[in-house]
Length: 67
View 1 (cartoon, rainbow, N blue to C red):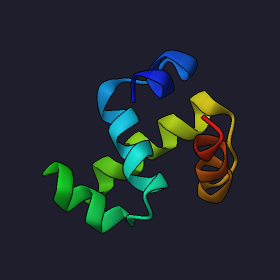
View 2: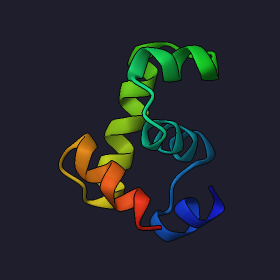
View 3: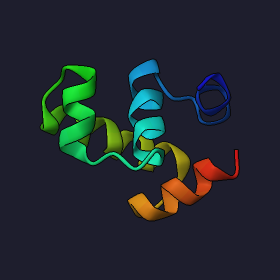
View 4: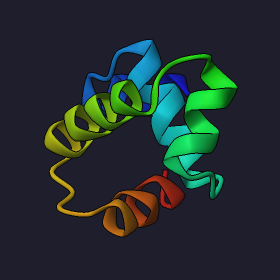
């Protein structure tokens, strides 16, 4: 996770959401795992997409797989 955080300037929670998404979890599962609301996960995901320059979740997952 530290590599993702450093490379893209992500917060800890943003990096957690990105990592769980890369593991194949959906928004609801990520929310349950982190103990937060699905809308909060969506907010973190939106920030991650913006910071990484990825346009879609699939693009983000591919990007994270290369790290």
